[in-house]
Length: 120
Image (cartoon, rainbow, N blue to C red; front, side, top):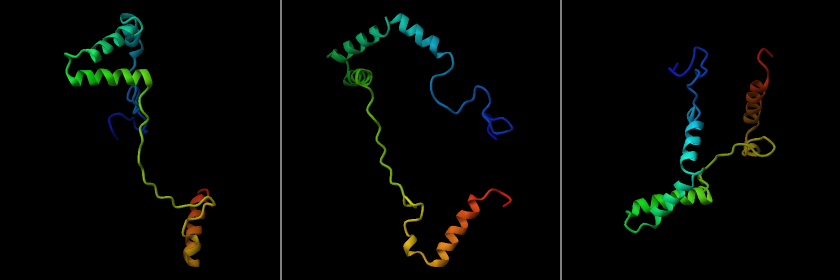
């Protein structure tokens, strides 16, 4: 059992596995908005940094990315995943027609037992 979980395996109060902003961040965000005229000062700074030819290329690139993320939204992440699908739309395995009769019966028996409630 990890230190984040109680005896029943549940996460203890304040030890959620979820990410996101920490508790109390709303007050920090409100203060940032108050001090930056609802974020206008942040945008002005980023635009100035992006247009500053004396800034390093990295600083200009970071400003560009910050502005484009907020102005147009972050790009959608594409995940290339190869998935093996074992069943067709009718629920049978893809090789059903090539399976021997004993293999078909075993396949059905394994799933029938798994689908039945305990004790039946």
